[in-house]
Image (cartoon, rainbow, N blue to C red; front, side, top):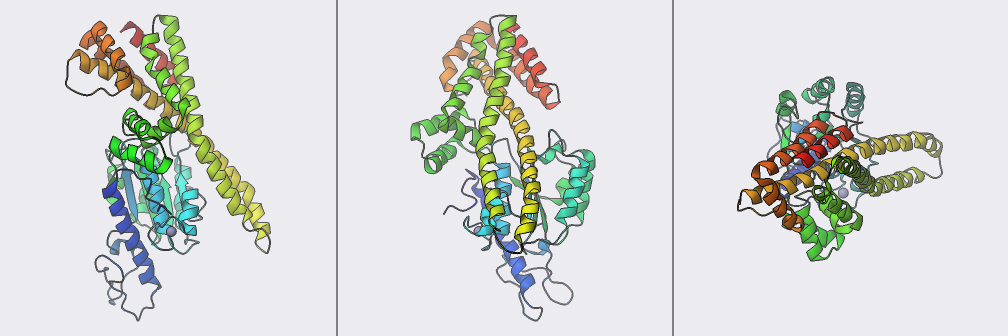
Length: 424
Ligand SMILES: [Zn+2]
């Protein structure tokens, strides 16, 4: 049975930190369970627990070595921020304190149904203050499973200022058994406020090396080594994308369509057609990306709800079931919206890679191309456009990404980009 950290590719250092923290957290729970007369200091902790005035170990999480109340997982898209946060949440709920992958704590956390783990996926483009207040309130309650209340906030960079302040209050005076796990691209003040940052421990994830990604595709998904290597390189360090490219012929076809854009831009009409095609491809990719997780979450929740079957709890369980399913559907819908934005952004990253290849070739820079399979086409572009024209096109793609990030309607931004790419 692979443990909960198995899918964190090329992140040995972060996994080491999280394993130590999970062990320390388990030790805190054991220390708290020991009667006050027993000397529990050093019981499995890496370093002595801080002692209160009466010489007993405090139950405060901060006292345990390696464990703390608030964490930020940073790294580029696809490096596995939310995968890491979920795995850590599972390790905190694990009956063995290790993230064994097999116990009910691990299993329900990974399946998204643990009662004490809340995954916050931003609803649309920002996380509002009401959602955050409700969350902070629930996070303060005693964990039903007797271990930790864990709140995972994906894309914490999308907190509104008011929501950030509500979260900050909770992090400043954390309930003793509550752990906040935030995910953000970086700790830059644009992504996460300086005050929140100062209260959190940072777990930096790196862009995984193509070799590590390829190895995982072979080991976990049974991909052919050649295909795995190509997919890992083409995905530029994005694990989820590499996996889809390796396993899904449709994903490969969509990528090829994106990289065919520069060839197709022969006039104004063609530019608008290319814009529509790009947006529709992103929607199709997003649907494919969330379908598997959605189905797994739903069946996992249905199993959990059906498990009550008979007896005194059954009526209550059925009453709660409809609400839980509705919650899940809402969460899945907002994830689909985000997935579309992400897919479009990845298409733009692919396209930027193409013009970047053209630019480096025009400059005769001694660097390997991003896209080996369109290198010849990029070379032809380099000759036609020269360095200056290649750079203008690269900038048009980057400006499109920035515009979408700044909430310009995607179709409008993409159409403007296509016109710039055509005109040069
Ligand atoms: Zn476990």
